[in-house]
Length: 285
Length: 285
Image (cartoon, each protein chain N blue to C red):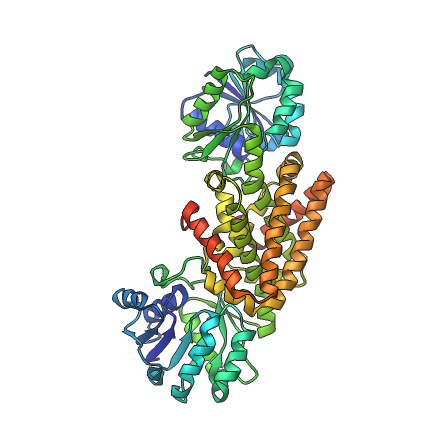
């Protein structure tokens, strides 16, 4: 491909720009964003070739990547829709898929066949172009959730870009995607934000954080993630997230009851099952 | 010191043995434990010099370290009490302090002046002597919670052993200790065990774990910790833990209400406060 236009040159958009250029998959990257200083850094660091200034520039693009928070996705789609060339593929990196697809149905109507919803599963507790790296997606999964309308050629083009970055493609329906990530991503983020906020509200919070071990650091690492991004995700995937919050709270109540009753056998049973499950699926690390 | 006797040659006991020998703080380590195979590995790997076989061997010890799960602490104290030499210092590495002190008051009665309760704050999601390393305590905190009865010389000796391992000493009352670690350690462990157990109970759990990103791995790492150890801790520090579980559940309910109400501003406020607090106290990593 000759030209990629990327909206949002943060960790994901910036890393994708670097990876695509390193792989030789695109010759030129035009980057758009709200933060002029961030874009300047991205251009000086060679992450992007050009700072975009007018949505009409997407007419030059072979592929347009929407790497902005989900809350800004609709506005960007509306801005670019009138300027897209017939062959241009549009894709996104949103952490929720059904809501982005709904926006695409509204704003990209007659372009829907060339819209390929995608979600790279790459840890993102760091943000901004300074955290971007060309190998961010190596050996990571990228979930693609095609629509009934999606042109198989467009799907293959987007899959090809991601595999060029070293990623492995998994295809899910948009519903499956949102259900899976409500459980293994959105719920854990809410739990981590809640834990930090709870500790921060304690008397002598400074001493508590000062004495926290590496385990606390691990548990709360994702609470360093972008508040704006996570606000948007929580609202976009609200129903599935609330369902999992309810389920998790029931699990926690079960553990609380075991602790309150002094039921050591019951606690050991849950802890052992949890440890063994985690080891089976995620190994030791 | 000439001889240290360590009960429990797992991650903590084994690492302490290695660190003390490397620092030249003790000449000889006798290791006791329930798992003969583990002790054999420890001796072959040079972690300990000798496998203990009879509690009367503590008569040779300058220091006795109790590094067994809190649930076994009382039994070990009762077994060693009749054999301790007058100068011998006894210390422990338990994750809870008030309950260990209560056991010491029962079993080490007239030896209480030379009992120094301690707790090294070193991540312990790995267990067993194979995970032991001489630098586990370097730049880590060791909390010492002396009793009114504790001989200042014994306190200094134990503090000296830990600083020789590279650790920094923080002194707290036993009550302060248990309150602090209920919040920043025991609560997070329960949350992580609950999260893994909750996901494991879902339909298609294998797919969920398979698609989980590094953030999920981080959040649940401490759920790989010893079930027996964490059962004992939860029961030993039950009251403080239940109080913090209640507080955390209230925080989670607040977040749930914001999500259910679609209150993006409220969510962003909590997430921003959490992120900034974590950054201030724990940095980016």
